[in-house]
Image 1: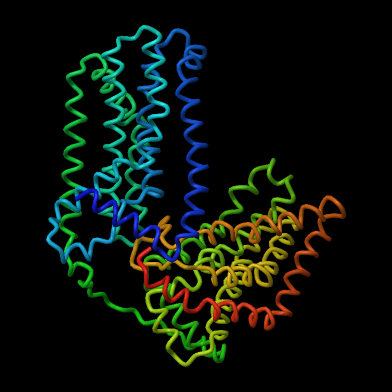
Image 2: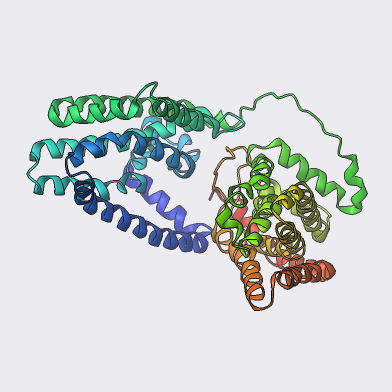
Length: 492
């Protein structure tokens, strides 16, 4: 049965409309994985001699065990945002004589072979071998290594349990922040010394190997709980059940001032406010507005004038980037229906452009208090805002014509990478690197004011030639129309 499951996933990968883009992303992620593996391997090899040199009177193993709590907390937070439960298209299987328990066991078993579980081994194994070379008891060291492997698997399944309970909340990342933040706070103020408790527990298992049954039982419990939670959701009609909610209808009459694009703007605003995934674009606005405070309060950073443009692009364009990079994938669930209607595609795209342009203007106005850090900061933000409206909006709309992955709007919003493809990775080059490169070149060659003026001129050119640019972009969408319809129908 497992062989058949693997065969189905293999065929689904190679037959997907987004195969080319997915392959490119996987190659890039492969190089990134090799980079992290090399770092962990180097850390595992250098950890023992490094600790011995820094703390000659202490046992390196005891030092490592005392810091395991911080590793567990960090690993759990990192996994929550980046590791997703490996899924397969199970709905067709539910109509076949396949036991639900086998499907669930396959999905959970596959998660155990995640890269997140293999990566720590590149540090654990070299450090364990170093301990053995330095005359530590072989049996005890091997027990210690297996204990850490069990801890890695416990974190793996614990992450999915937290995700399962937080998926229904509006701010789905809040539980993991409260749990990790709460544990760290209790430990930091020495209310409960979790680092000592966990360190002493690992030390006890090292000295008495039979105690390894404790983390083993915890792992079995976490697996069983995951099994129960997933099996409970594995029904054909589970996706048909809907929650009854009280709808708060907003007055969007003001959009009528925008003429023909008003109906599309109303649909976009309703879509943004009524779905988990799109709401993230709204909540991220607050982060974007305060982003400059991470840098401008630093006296060293305030001297790095070329970096003002990076902060300005990000701060005034946070909504533009979060919303614009997934056009038209936001509408993927009803894109086929949308294309059967008697509508002008250019009006559809202009509504997206108008929303993004308005957001940039609002964010710039709200960010005017940054003038407190100097008039250069405000001027750089103004230049970045004009550049965002005139150039980056068109870049994002053009990039959207290459989107081939659908988006489930009901999934949790925080750090959800569904629908992300090669386009979303490459689009950062013209969005950030190009304006920063142009600004930096003119800044060092001529001066700050001229560099800002060049970006403003580029933005104004984009605004002046907006109609012509939109005709080119619209034609690109029309050429890709049927490819996108076919791709959005697939379960990527």
